[in-house]
Image 1: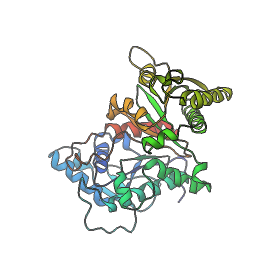
Image 2: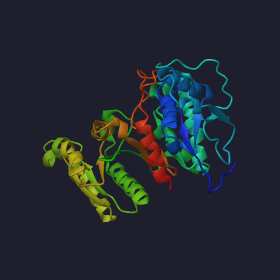
Image 3: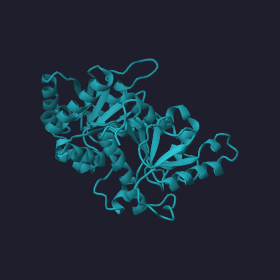
Image 4: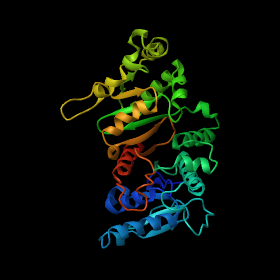
Length: 354
């Protein structure tokens, strides 16, 4: 059904039901009712009920737990029921008598997680939901289910490409990790370090700069100042420690400047993130750092605090955010997982969906 402009809910995908996703969603509804108003959960009713029971057992007598019944909804309604956790059951024909055990890799959980993300992505592409916030999934569980994508970013990219009727290569996306102090965008995402080095090409660096520029301009109304990290120690030391900066990164930056993008670098990777960091005393030199590979960009953001970090997928024709942490199998089923990063992701989604 088509949604009116007055009501377009935010879809929260449950992630891997053997992980902490259902718990942090339940805690978000319990502890931040104003923030979760207008949200629906896409996933498994049984998993949501199990998570709420876990919270009840971990915190007996909590006064707000009685306000968390689960209501199964069949379609996107014109309004969502109040004082409940609305769950759209996906896959619709699921009749599993037993949920996958907490903290264990399961192909069933991997398939359910992928199905929920796929449903939510297509709902967003049809303009039926205003944004998608994804709870963590487990890459091994996806592989066990035979899902041909290593993570959320690649799965969402494939959904968007299918919707647009184009090849996946014609729907380039990038991962941005952000908190109040630092934003970083990655040239490559979930590939081996060897393959990540091979992915540092003029085309990929330039494409990352273009996608970041357009996304930040759309979100803030201002062109971002992008600081670019080198690939090699000390950004190559003029070719003494590697030539990627001279042969690849600098030519990409020169082309970006010719197109009117505000870019600086390449800078030594061990200092550029400190220069970009916003603190109470000083604004960072750059609005965002372009990192050459996954860990180079994510370690600084996560060091500043996983609870505050948000993952944003840039380049998609939909808004998608997620918490900056994984399934935390060691915490699953204990009721101890913090919803802080998930709530930060939800707040970011609302901001971007305006």
